[in-house]
Amino acid sequence: PRVAIVGRPNVGKSTLFNRLVGEDRSVVHDMAGTTRDAIDTLVETPDGPIVFVDTAGMRRRSRIDDSAEYYSMVRALRAIDDADIALLVIDATEGVTSQDQRLAERVDASGCPIVVMLNKWELIDDAEQRAEIEREVRRKLYFVDEAPLLKISALTGKGVHKLRPVLQEAIEQYSRRVPTRDVNRVIADAQQRQPAGHGLKVLYALQGATDPPTFTLFVNRELPAPYLRYLERSIREAFDFGPTPIKIGRAHV
Image (cartoon, rainbow, N blue to C red; front, side):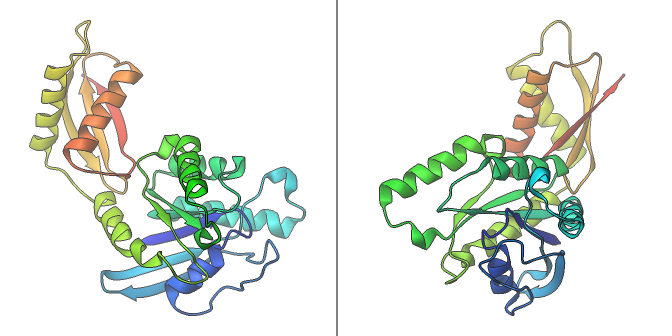
């Protein structure tokens, strides 16, 4: 599995990367923009091999100063598209910025699970401030509200150990395949609880792919978007997909 570490410049991505791989593979400096290219490192873990990818910090295009930085951003975006899981690193002392929101949207659109890493947590002493930061994350990143939220210090290593079980669960969910009979049972139960109305109906359903889990619904007519979200939520809850994105396709019969 490929795990991409993404975020704005100078939020601690390379420090986290070095701690995860156990050696200094990326230059760590307090000047923004140190990492110029995506760096892949294969790490043997108790749960099996994992490729960690350190990416360049991504800024708004209007703030990109030269061609080297532009192509660093392009390679970072490619790393996101190739990733199975993305660790979105956010500076807890700055909170969630508009750029953090856009990055989360970009990762979500790529179809891979997100783990939100609130870095530099050790610098937040006040309990009320910590609670407000957590509320802000959930409010501003509401579109990935299923994503695990870990409070860490990449510098000291505190809290980083919590990532391992979260990664393992995300990897399993991302590659999970559900038997067709079970998919149809869940869809039938969901339709019985809450019919779509107007004669609209899912006649048959199956999982056509993994990475991410992708389901095809064979319908008699086009289903409205709110009802599709209801069916997606039913599938997610029934099979405990957690934060893993689910793709729903439709085919007319």
